[in-house]
Amino acid sequence: MTTTPEKQRQGIQSIEVGTRLLRALAAHGRPMMLRDLAKNAGMPAAKAHRYLVSFMRMGLVEQDGNTGRYDLGSFSLELGLASLSRLDPVRLGTPILDDLCERIGETVALAMLGNHGATIVRWMEAGGPITVTLRTGTVLPLANSATGRAFVAYCRAPFFKKLLEKELRANAEATDKTVTAQVRELEPIIDEIRLHGIARASNSLTPGINGFSAPVFDHTGHMVAAITSLGSVGNFDTEWNSPLALAIKEAAHALSLRLGYNETEQPPAPSILASISR
Image (tube, rainbow, N blue to C red; front, side, top):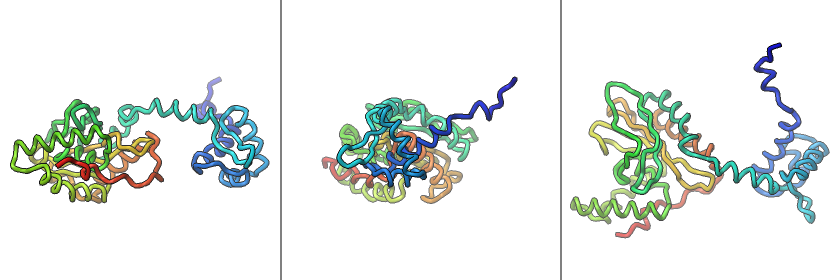
């Protein structure tokens, strides 16, 4: 007898129902009374209580003896920490990049902060008449590339500040622009990036090539990566609200959620430019 795929996918309904209580506790963010917890989980209080008794035995839930409120237990914390330790932006981002590349028909990449700056760790080329040179290990300039500017707008790591200062000093030595002048030029650009939630650059790396880059955040609310797309001028729409920009922002947001980012987090801190030595 052959088992149908539908039967193979059948699970234990009571577990799925009980999980609604755990989701309600996780979403609420603080201990809850039984009546409120049951209401949020969409079940009668008596039914919720039976589930909670089992969850307490397992360590998934605990109850405060003084207030009677329920909260996530030690085993829930253990599961959460184990899950966080397995979060890999490159692994989780690969299918998202695949989908984005197919959706927009442009070269896409994932960049992370490396020893020398914003570094491409994964890339996918859409193909076409114009080839965009973007390879794994490529380090992108922080001040002039869309990817670098995304990090300038959102990254707060002390190490990143040193990298940015080093680049600005090198630029000052190679041109007649002081560090102070460069920071003043960058400030309105970064403000605009933070307003729209995505960075852009035109002809910054290669003549005739435009770029967009959106930040990726982890469960702590810190920027850990950027999803970037490059394309030729004329075919690559750099309007802030273009379908292309929205698709890249959606992809970055999807990866952020996979990394545990909480959408209710406070707005990001001011950009690191204010603390740059001039």
